Image 1 (tube, one colour):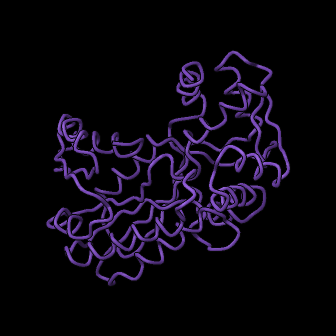
Image 2 (cartoon, rainbow, N blue to C red):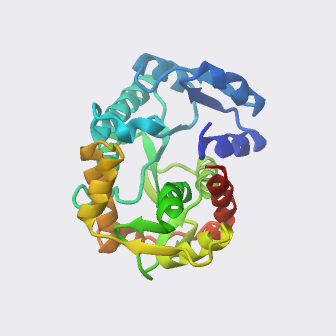
Image 3 (cartoon, rainbow, N blue to C red):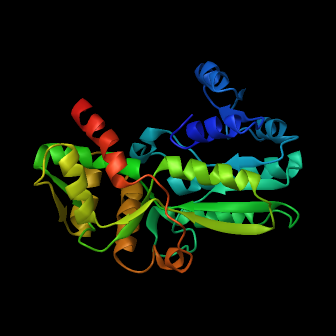
Length: 292
């Protein structure tokens, strides 16, 4: 029932599909059923549960999801935790006999070097590619999510600026979860044929343009995007409690935005951009800004 799966469920149900939604929370069951879907309550760590839930499905859409506070958990390795979830999916797919998979991967999954925290997406695709050839897989590779911009709010409020280790006027792609959901719904109904990759983006826009758009939405037309050294961002993240190893991966991911590493494969396979733009998201950003 997250930012992608909820609108995806709505769209698939509206199109007449029989949808089952997995949730670890029994409290979500009524919300799932209210959308016209079936609820399967269990965890991504339980292979037997996943296997039984997958059985008989025409298509399984799989994504890795850890709780919101995991970046600040000093006892967990995010890359290892996500890879284990993918291994659970792989085992359940093999045991259930499902032949059509849509997997939520990410930009940066084309390499295991220089992409920081996104390395786990490369490893996840590698694990799923070990499945038999008669299992078709569509790897969805969205770019940076709009809602990651909510993380800008604290420094806007405290220092009247967006502060990151990347910035400037170079355009880079961002995506709305709504557009991701639409693409996945589209792919559910298209033929499956071996292994395929599809990038998903909504708008290509520069950091300075983002600052201008968000600033106007919160009635702060002078909002600036300030670029700081990598080491300063790393220290700032550790200071607010982020797991140091996670913080290092986060900073390295942002470093990859500045060169050719993160976007090199995207630029070779540029998608048609979705309909939801940063200006549309700015309304949600402003609501969150004033609420916080």
